[in-house]
Image: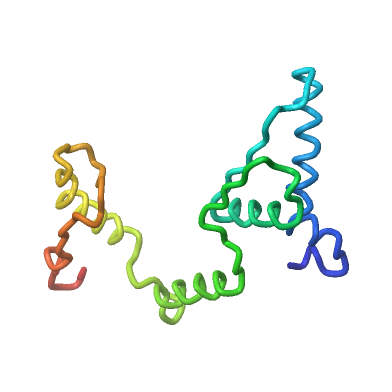
Length: 145
């Protein structure tokens, strides 16, 4: 991160301190507005928020009475390489495997095949695991294949 080069305090702020400071100020704002401190304080976060939740629990356990850290994105190196692998798999030699107009064609075909599996035709797929979509129905021949 270029913004943090030569500025270790910026990295600490980004990594964990900003959430802690925000928590302290929020508690004071609640006191000013309500005339008293909150009786309980909870933190719920998922993905990057889950990472923040774990960081709060480890560094500042007194900040919250309860913390839920859902799907924490806490292994950034593996996560970044996972994103890179997915991108490279979908972009051989820098190009897209499927152009956007083909992706919408696939989406429409999947919704058409699986929308009513839950008994309701509403344009939504309730449980993709119950969908028996066969991509072979989109097999085509010719120039625009």
